[in-house]
Image 1: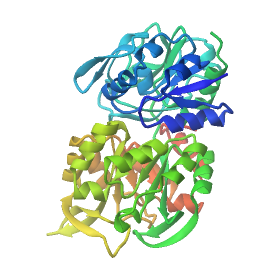
Image 2 (image 1 turned 90 degrees about the vertical axis):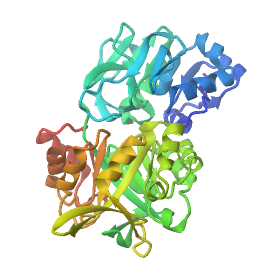
Image 3 (image 1 turned 30 degrees about the vertical axis):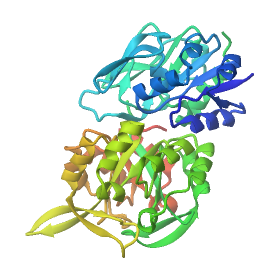
Image 4 (image 1 turned 90 degrees about the horizontal axis):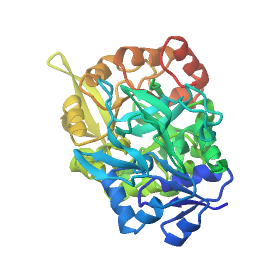
Length: 199
Length: 259
């Protein structure tokens, strides 16, 4: 079963690849239309600025292939945020991929330091195969300043000043706000669940 | 709740992990990957690799060893040392580093911080500050030093710690590591007054560095300076403090810790 990490031109591609390799998978990093279309599973990684990542996706002509993907697709961190309708970044609002309804805004951290950086606890809200083996209170590694509010698509919540979506899913499209590739055993379990997930 | 982070720091020189006292007299403490894997297994929350000779010798960290670390390690790690351009930072992030930390090159050219933030986002840009406490007219001053990797090349910057911290935050950095040089390597405890003074002026995550020698020092710095993480080297390298014992003890005293 082929696993393709979509090359968005962002910087954390190799860490994501290594994480899947530690699970015995053989991921391929690609921005090729045919390779992406033929993949059994897709991963959309991303770090950095949303406008930069969306522009890369457009310039590589990958917008439609991602939007019309039918195979399991997992967004990670910024890649997860891109799955939503709209995203805020530096006061601007840009269009995301529109695969999960909702808006990604500035995380309201109240008086806590921002960015939200470090290990925080997951609160699974749904009994779902993607979160098999994940318990309330398990820690995952987060690094972000923006987030999606809780919605009907939230599978797991997290709280930092205010609650936000840690794991989202709509049909074949899912995403983690944290970095599963850097979240030790908890992250590895979620990536393993993704590899075994049946639609 | 967000957990307080325990961060072993690996000072790297010529591909080996070394440790000095007050930034001098470096001794060899082991292989990079071996130590990194040991700390991961023991429950470290994050690792920092400082190539302490990079700035002074005008060379950059090898992306190859970063890839090696990234392929084996499933916790976040930050790479520092001689990163003086968007290209140098990009190479390290592409090789698998989660964050990059800048110190001397940012002091030489502060716009570097803006450029890095624009290219990679606030979340992966850390600024390290080496601060030395001095007395001036009976008052203590925190002076920022640069090129601290080699005592012969260490420089005064003419900057004070809090104004410099405010400037790097204004320029968009996502985290500050404050190395209190008077405490470095002597294991007498973190500089709580200095860290607490910065905390009041620091809306981004703050990591304490310099002085860890006992479990109580970690407890004190989290409780009294409210830092987000505590970095230490020699107490971990020399097995004076075992990370699992440290984390259990902190958790038992009511501090939010990932076990």
